[in-house]
Amino acid sequence: QQQKSTTAKKSDTSQDLLTDIQAKFQQQKSTTGKKSDTSQDLLTDIQAKFQQQKSVKKSDKQSSIAESSLQDIAKNFSQKQSEIKQHKKVDNLEEIRQKELEKQRQEKQLRRKAEIWLKNLDSYSDEGFWFEQFALSYPSKLDAAIDYLRALQ
Image (cartoon, rainbow, N blue to C red):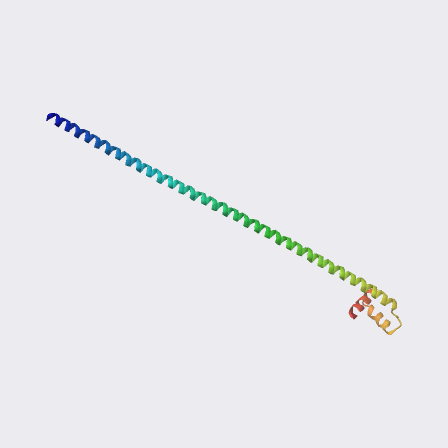
């Protein structure tokens, strides 16, 4: 019986030892599981932050591209506006030049007409006498004839 009791004690001790080892193993396993969970959470957080930064960089690039495009459009618009202004100035100058040329042409034509009118004027006629009096206030008879013919037009 003593042997049975020694065997029972050994069996109990073995059982206790086995239970202890199992408990420690379970504890280590749960700690490792927690570490694994913590590592997994940490990995997930890092991936989320990376994705967030990636999307921020993409949106920064997109907004940078959009801003650059807007600047290009604004620059092109201002260039076109200045070109239009320049063309208007050139057109206005051309128009002014054309008007000046037309005015000079009309003055030449009026001068020729006045020269012909003076050649044909009979200074002994009533019109000739009147014109002689009229021309006294002008530097020349031609200037008086030009002014007179201009008034008749």
